Structure formats: C-alpha cells, structure tokens
Amino acid sequence: MTEKIKPDPFKEYLDKVNAYLVAQDWQDVPQMAGSHFSVSPLAKGEYNLNYNLKTEHRHLVFRVNMGSQLERDDQILYEFNTLKLLENSGVTPRGYFVDNSKTLIDCGISIIEFLEGEHLDYHQDIESAAATFGRIHSVTVAEERNHLIPEKQPLSLIYNECARLLETYFDSHLADPDISDYLHKLLYWAESERKKESYFLQEPFFSIVNTEVNSGNFIVNRKKNITHLIDWEMPRWGDPSSDLCHFCSPLTTLWKSKYRFTSKDYLRFIETYKAHCPSSLLKQTLAERMHLKNPFVYLRGISWSAMGWVAYQTEYEGIRNEQTWKTLCDYLNLDFIRSLFDPFLKR
Image 1 (spheres, helix red, strand yellow):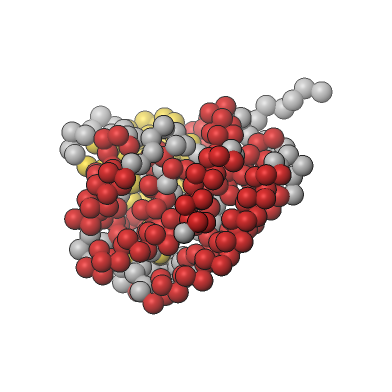
Image 2 (tube, rainbow, N blue to C red):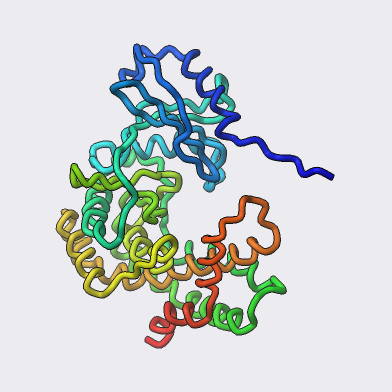
C-alpha cells in the first residue's frame, strides 16, 4: 500500500493568505492600507505558520494559528493581547491586526511586526538577553486588562506537570531501571520540596513571563544593539524567576548549542538583569526565588525529555529530527541527570 503524502501546510495556506489579503478592507490598519504585499513562507512550528508580507518599503509577518498548546480556541487572541500589553517594552514585536472569526480563513490570524536580526548566541548575548528580561518583567498591567493565566502555586504546578510526563517513561518497557529509580527518588524529593512555595505566596511578585525562552525565540539586532523576545505562544502571569531559571538551565542552553553557564557568566547575567529591573523587592529576593525554582525548572526539562525519548521510539508520527533525537539521548543519561540533581538532593 502506498503511503499517502501529507500536503505541505505552507503551500496549502499560501493561496488562502493571498485571498484573505485581497478580501479584507485595510483602511483601519495603517500598516496595511494602500499596499500590495507579496507573500512567502517565513517559518513554521507545530502550531503556527508564519509568512513574510513584503512591499518595497515594508516587511510584516502574517501568522496563521493551527492549534494551541494551551488548548484554547482563542489562542491567537491570547498571543496578540499579550503583545499589546508589552508593546511599550520595546523588546517584543508590535501587533497590528488580529482576527479570530475563522470566516475568511479557517484559522485565527494576526499581523505583527517583522524584526531584523539573528538568533541569540549564548557566548555573546546573555547580557542583552538579561536587559530584555528586565524590560519585560517591569511592564505593569492593569488588573482589568490582565487576560493572562496566573501561576498561583508555581512549584506545585511544575510538580504536577512533571508527574504526568514521567508516567510515560515509568510505564514504558524501554525505560532504564536505574534511571527510573532515580527519577522516582527525584519526584518524591520534589513532592516534599514543593511545600516551600509558601515563600512565593508570602512574597508575591507577578509579571508577564514568557515560559519558552530558548535561544531560537530571541532575535538579536547587533547593529541597533537590541534583543527582542519574539514568540509569545504560552505567556503566563507569574514569577520572573520562571523565565530566568529556564533561560539559564543547561537543558535549555544545551538543546541547540554546546553552551553551559559558568558561575561567572551566571553572575554577569543576574547583575545585568537587576540593573534593568526597577523593583527593589525583586532585586532583594531574586537569589532566593531562583534558588527555590531552579530544581523544579530542571525537573520539568528532564521530565519532558523522558516523555519525548519514549514517544520518539513509539508513537511519534512527525518528521524525525536526528539532532533532537541525539539530544534526548544525551539528556537521558544517568550521569547527566545526576549532575543536575545530586547537588539539590544532598543539600
């Protein structure tokens, strides 16, 4: 039986995007009015298709939302409204237009700013990234405008997510018994440690957090000396330590590079962040917040990797990425896992 070849969604939606551009009246959108744009594929992920919109003097991004990691029917609105909250930060894309009616095109769509630059390089951009985080986490949000999902019990939230993810590994015949034993021990430790989230309840500090801060979600413009955080699929109303710990985690930096924070680089990153964050409370308590959050962020990373390691060998139906598979195998190494968590288990 011949395997059915799935159509390329980029090609499938190209005509739909062009038809949408022709059908809409753009008089109320200054960035679009009176222009004829050429359309070409830019980048795609599991949940979104991004197209270049170009004229001789203008470059925008047409975003087609294909699904939601948050399981929301209003995913494109959730993203777009977050960009509107952040537009005065100067380090996120500006949103110009959104449509979740799914009438002229069968998906939610938005039109946002295109940003020139290249992806972040940990060896030369960590201070610029720290400044970006400082500006984002300093954005104030009026209560009536806050549509963001709150992270009220941050350690329990991560623990419960990890417990679900690790069941895939524990239940698999592929699981290494020694790794399973260690991960069970680690989960038991985390269940006890999550009680320390009382600190976050007693000293709350809420801000807009991105939650997906790998290097590919940053655009660095070296000519203008500015770094933008561009992907806002899963923002939350949470503690800034979530983004900072995730950014510094070896499970983040080693995913697509060989970089790992040194203690000197870590200190440089934190001090730069503090210099761009006006809150005296956050500056005074940041070390404790990150100290409590770090092992849980690591646990989320290794739990997701364990689930992915099993899925890649059993039920995965997408295009196999050999570099992703190699990284998952590197992470699912007992010595590597112990290097992450033994310091926390022993303290």
